[in-house]
Length: 151
Image (cartoon, rainbow, N blue to C red):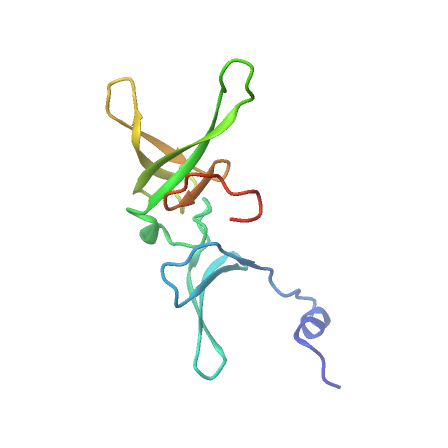
């Protein structure tokens, strides 16, 4: 008797790997997903099938579907909670910048190194911070922080 792929995998004691869709891809011609710890590119073909290509191990720091090389130079917006005016609740404030180093994302030593446009450090230079899995950030310029689950 014929069985579906899930039943076949279960009969062999190997569950199918979970496919986790990524929110970004470098262009509009492909989708990205994490499958069994690998970053995979999926491209639709004219015959209705999909071409898949394993790109790399999934980076330790979630790059939302890009490889560390593709993340380099990309514009980003990060949100940091800041105190509101007296009597106002804290609010998320957007800061924009660009990725200046992504080499630590694969090893987990650090995240994306971002140089922010208008935030200055104590010396008056553009502030540089690392963005990791615990930070709220997206590629591109954004005035408003999207609701959870919509990005």
